[in-house]
Amino acid sequence: MQDIDMAALGHQVLWVAFGLSFVFGLVAQRTHFCTMGAVADIVNMGSWARMRMWVLAIAVAMLGFNAMVYAGWLDAGKSIYAQPRLLWLSNIVGGFMFGFGMVLASGCGSKTLVRIGAGNLKSLIVFIVMGIAAFATLKGVAAVARVATVDQVAVTLGSGQDLPSLLAPGLGMAKPMLALAIGAVLALALIVWVLLREEGRSGEVLLGGIVVGLVVAGAWWLSGRFGHVAEDPNTLEEAFVGATSPQRMEAMSFVAPMAYVLDWLMFFSDKSKVLTIAIVSCFGMVAGSGAMALATRSFRWESFRTVDDLVSHLGGAVLMGIGGVTALGCTIGQGISGVSTLSLGSFLALAAILAGAVASLRWQIWRLSR
Image (tube, rainbow, N blue to C red; front, side, top):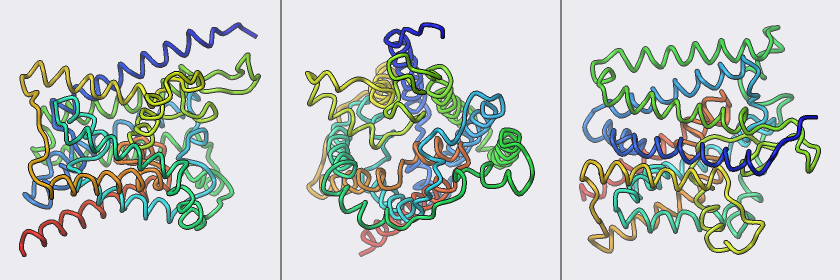
């Protein structure tokens, strides 16, 4: 067996992860890439431009991921999204909570990091509270409640919950070929929808959608291909270097990673607390956004104006932290990374996130009308 310098490989993986997230933050700040904003634009103004940007990112990531599955580089079953146990109620309930909360907090997890980079102190508070709520849902009091309630309602499938695994036996096709076919058809349909209207062909929409989609696909390649070791010389087991779980490849997501950032900062002297792709991606997002904000002279300090503003953001942060972990991801984690694997749970979570966001926006309009 060829000798592998695991420490050197780990450093390379983390630097590339930082670079990818830096580009994400840079472009998100420049193009105003934001899922919550996309939904709000539709509900409040009837504008679909930012929604087309987000859908384009999904299409690019989906095409990239499934092309790599066809090439034999990746396997959806080695991600958290395509496991045989379909936590459908957790996906729906958690997704709805996250979607409702991201409107109250003025943005999802990725937008929170982008806003921090641009000097928004409100988002810094959201980050801290969201990270604490996420950690409580991973390992604390909310985790006990989650495991005892919604996580109990699940369906165990005979294969992974990704569409190629589910359909391959009945269609008599090899999973890699089926993944490429489904991924390509769905991605092409989404791209056609994006480009049908002039607003979807604008430079900003194309830049944001294509770059974010490529960043997510790049993260899958980094974790599942570049950082993949068939046999770790220390454990003699398969490993994904730099991943949060050594047994699972991962891409961009910004709920649980916030909890991991707080954990790493608070227990820095504990040698078992090491940097991961998830942690450095949060730092990269802030750095990239900050660089763009400074370059465009849009950096400015912003804080809460009223008590109601503070209460809204705190409530939204709690809902996003609990909901994001329960749903196994956010608008990026489930909405792009998860959906790119063609996972049923990811599609459910995405639909619930959008429903929660619309409900929250309608509720705010109702409050204002009173």
